[in-house]
Image 1 (tube, one colour):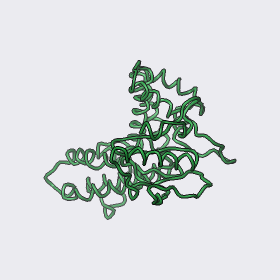
Image 2 (tube, helix red, strand yellow; image 1 turned 135 degrees about the horizontal axis):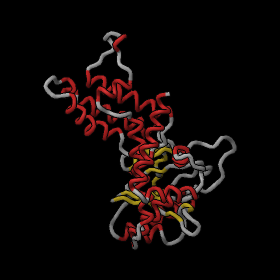
Image 3 (tube, helix red, strand yellow; image 1 turned 135 degrees about the vertical axis):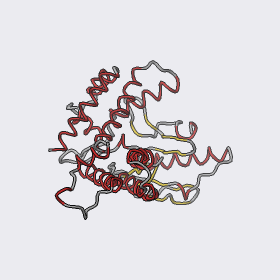
Image 4 (cartoon, one colour; image 1 turned 90 degrees about the vertical axis):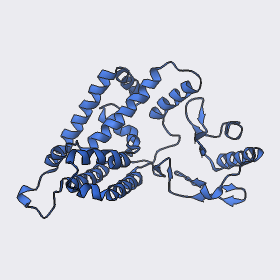
Length: 302
């Protein structure tokens, strides 16, 4: 990978003097480039370097995704055209060309629904207590639903989808049916109290800021070598601005903009350093996150 992707700067602009060439995990490699020429060159070099150690790139498993690209020329590996898609799954998360998370959330809900249905015998059981059922739900269903939620761009529509799915599961576990007396039909707030759970969107918010705090604290650690590079990369990713010009019009909602709005800060890199000061103290950061969660819950009740 060093010989194929890091011989010359062909990746995306990452900082003033650095470029991000690739993202690697186990035997998965994600190559990044601004132009078709750079990407084709990286693929060619990777193919040549792989052949030296007896490795062959599986073109059937390779996919490409383009964001606001005008060049429609195909990418070639070993004489075969790489499949071009609008979204693909990487490490369990759905990556879309528009940068949104709607497809990812829909995929997580679908998988969580499948996990919930496979445990239908447990939900129907009259022997298992309600508290144990909720523990099983949190471990086997909610964990599937909220996988990767720390980096979701959560819109109002996504919040509603999550709340509808989870509340529907709660009603089935507690055995509250639509055919019951409408006058005794519990509200969502009463349902959460009876289930002993909190609002799903508040859980998403807690996980999100738990991860943000962990990432910001890594910047304050004095690590060196590979870990030091990883620390710098994590922090740079939070304040990174993509190269190019934005189309005129209302600024599109992004994950970073939602974070700044929730923290009541301007969308500037300098404000990340303010969050760093808060995150460095775990007690202050925990109180800060709880305050955000209570504000979110209060706003949703309105």
